[in-house]
Length: 215
Image 1 (cartoon, rainbow, N blue to C red):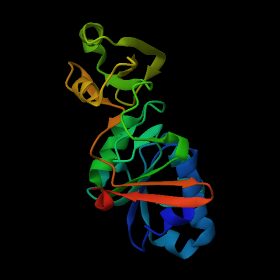
Image 2 (cartoon, helix red, strand yellow):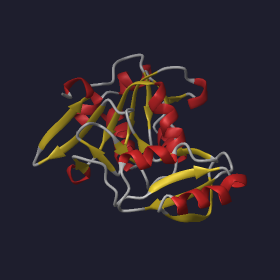
Image 3 (tube, one colour):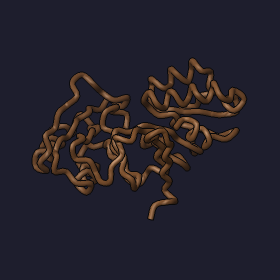
Image 4 (tube, rainbow, N blue to C red):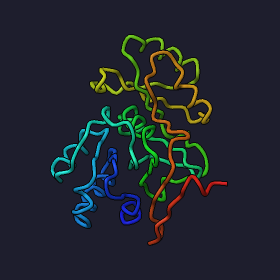
């Protein structure tokens, strides 16, 4: 999988490494395999943990907000469909990850075969970043829409906002899209129409799903 991902990285590119251990492994793998290529790259990240990894590996780092275009952005996910929609509910940095995804020519998810499915996975919660002043109205909207909302206690985002996990096993993709429009919602962990590639390994074989190959 890492070898397949590395094929997408060319000299002089601007590359984003997202959150998670798999993406961190890719950053290290690239250094081990081609130090010359690594020195030509500019890299960015939405993740403080990944930033530490990139610093230790001596990458040339630029702030995400200072980058206009990303050639290829790598990220992980908790679930992805075969038509390249994704759910990223665990990490809680989805707003910044979406910022990288929208700037990227290729937004590539590195994942596991058990996290691939045909349709939206309602068993996973939707994580929403919510402005604190709008939290009460947000909770009212969640209740009206049939969601159980749980605040992540003691956690605030880099923007000082709250994180809520929304649970509803009858939730559809349309319901998840609607959450994005609720008062106070800065962004959610639903990644629809953003991903261009999904790479994973299954039974010793690397599978690479591409947007261009979708029927």
